[in-house]
Amino acid sequence: MNGQILFILGSASGGTLMPPGTFPQQSGGILYFLVFIAIIVTLRLYKGVYGRRYSNARVLRLPVIYTILALISVLILGFIDNVLLLTLAFIPLGFIVAYRFGSNVNFFTRNGEVYYRRSPVIMIIWLVSFLTRYILEILYGNNLQIIMLVDAILSLTTGLIIGEAFHILSRRKEYVPQPSEAEKEADNFRINL
Image (cartoon, rainbow, N blue to C red; front, top):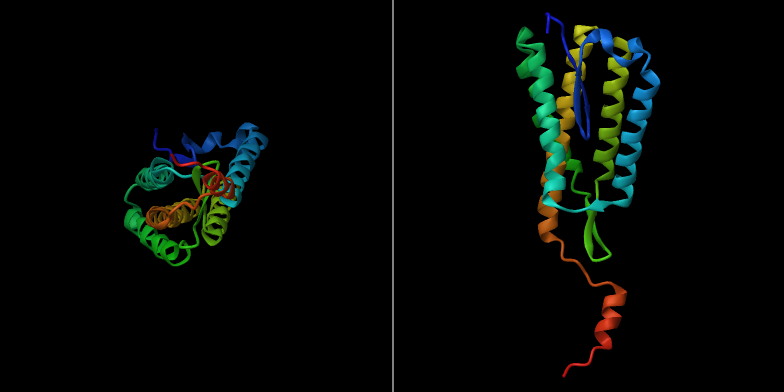
């Protein structure tokens, strides 16, 4: 690492480690980077509004990715003035916020498959924190205090996503899919022999 602090560019699909000298604005790739961020935001909003197919793996994947990114980003900074403990303390705070606002998860059935819509409050908080992290990294990427703030935001977001996953998993157990109108009508025409 040559003593350089590495930045973590976390996303819903994973993260990339980049030394400060190669951040997109300095390498001419800022446009590609912004397009990449816009695609992630658009897909997350679309799936949040219109729903995504439910599976336990799908619900648990994002909290695991965010937890790994939060731990890596904090461990890269090292143990500077208890940064590790202070930053990781934001995970329970995010969980508490998600526990309070994450219960607005809605389940529905489409084509015989169970789908869910995220809590709008959690989706908005995620969007704001996601964009804030990248704006701060682009504008002030070499400032250690900003890096610590970005890590704290990532930890808060991690707690939010863990709390939301908790609500999704518990609400799924309560959800009983109702037959569609077509299925009800087909049942009316069945002849029992």
